[in-house]
Amino acid sequence: MAFFEYVAKPTAVHRLNPVTKLAVTGAIVVSATLLRDFFSLSLILAITLGWWYWSKIPVARFKYLLSLSIATITVIVIGNAFLFVPPRGKIAIEIYSGWWFNPLAMSPQQGLAIYLDGIVFGLATGIKIMAMVCALPVLVTTTPIPSLMTAMSRFRIPYKFNFILGSALRFAPLFYSNFATITDAQKLRGHDMDKMKLLEKVMKGYVPIVTPLVLLLLRSSDDMQIAIESRAFGAPVKRTYVEELRMSRLDYLVAGFSLGLVLVTIYGVVTQGSLVPVGLIPYWAKPA
Image 1 (cartoon, rainbow, N blue to C red):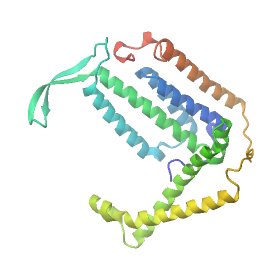
Image 2 (image 1 turned 45 degrees about the horizontal axis):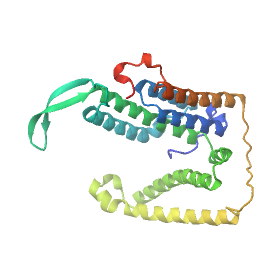
Image 3 (image 1 turned 60 degrees about the vertical axis):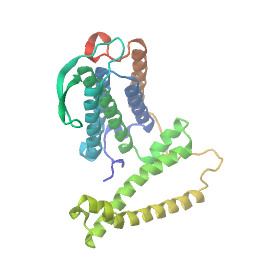
Image 4 (image 1 turned 180 degrees about the vertical axis):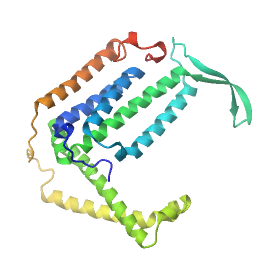
C-alpha cells in the first residue's frame, strides 16, 4: 500500500470539500511556519493530531515517514542542546557543565555545556516539522486526485501545475505497486535480496529490479503523453470540470476556523511573538 494513496472511508473529513481541506492544511503550515515558541507550536500540533484522528487514517500506514521524522527531530534536539548560542540580551540556562571525552584528542576535556534553552528550541523546531508532516498526508489520503486538482484550480493555480502534482501523486502508488510486483517476480526466479548483505544489495541486488521498473515507468509516461496530447492538453480555452464542488455548512465552519487560526497566529506573532499569551509561557520557553 503506497503512502499517498486515497483511502475511501465514511468520515466527515472525507466528505468535506477539497477546498476546505486545502484551507486547513494551509492554515496549519502557515501557523507552524510563523510560530517559534514551544507552547504555541504544541497547540498547533494538537490541532493537527485532532485533524488526523478525525480523518481515521491509520498511523501504521505512515510508520516509515513518522520514524524518519522522529529520527530527524532527535538529531535536531541533541545538536541544539550542545551547540545552542543564546541571543543577545538573554541568559541561557545550563543544565550541565563539566568534562567530556574528546574522541579526536583521545582525552577528557573541560568545557562541555548542555543548555535547557537549546533543548527547548530543538523541541520547538521538531514540533514545527511534525505538525507539517502530519498535516499533508491527511489531505492526500482523504481526497481523490481529480477532486484535489479541481480544488486547486479554485485558488487560481495554473492547471499545468495541478496536472504535474496530480500525476506525481498518481505515479507514487504505481511506482510502489510495480516495485513490489517486480520484487516478487524476481524472488520466484531465485533473486532474493532479503538474504543479501548490504554491500551486495548496493552492488548487484537492485539492478534486476530497478532496470524493469524504469522501463515500465518510461512506458507509462509515454502512454500518458499520447493520452493528454490526444485530448488537446494545453489548448488555450477555458477549462471545465466534470465534478462541481459545493460547500456545506460544515465546510464553512471548518474553513472559518482555518482562517481564524491564521489571523490569530499573525496577530499573536506581531504583537507578542507567540500564539499563547506571553504571561503563561515560562522564561526558558519564550521565543528569542
